[in-house]
Image 1 (cartoon, rainbow, N blue to C red):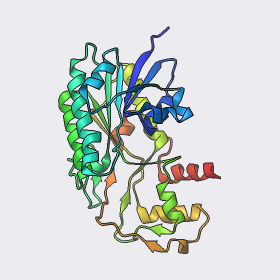
Image 2: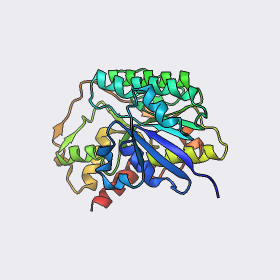
Image 3: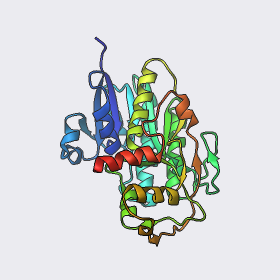
Image 4: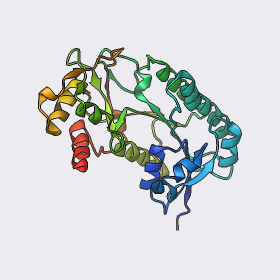
Length: 294
């Protein structure tokens, strides 16, 4: 019988809990680290799949105390407690510094370290096609903090795999649907490209990396995780209006953004890894979401 591996999820929130629900628990024991595990334990669906441990991921001593007993895979997936420069500094830069301090000193280093980041590191806005070879040019404090954290992890753990997710949607992540229901939309011109990924594909790709690595495959150091069809936001909203049973006139409020963010993300490296998207474009993903809502 194959010995179980220990998977540690640091900052275990929504993505971590979803992954814990999806992973083969005959092969993996899942541990989740949070400052307040009671918040997670209040949700029954999380309580029975994650072994919760209290710890502050901005403190190296807390990470070392927990991981010293053995960690085969470390998945770091953090989110800010507030959307301010200080919140992003704590959530990403300080946690990366603490993790980067601990990992190289562990008696038995993890076989795989996965650091979840965001395509927000790309502040480009000229509709250019971006892939992993495109230098990131952050256009906000959020992007700057995310990129700084990546650099810290890369320097401390060169073999770490950084995963940059595009805009995540799916059950429980339906902000765009709420906007469309309220009749709000992006301006038709100039086009503002949207890059999205269904939450099931976020989890699917992380599991794909874990399983392939276990069989001896070495992942690339960086992946952009997005679906295969960047689309202008206005076009996406027009499609949603019809799919939701409204007329085009329902979109009556044009929402102007303070800055124009429009880029197209390429996912060829992700596809070349052998991963097959469950929802390759917005029609498949949002169609399934609307069908599930009834």
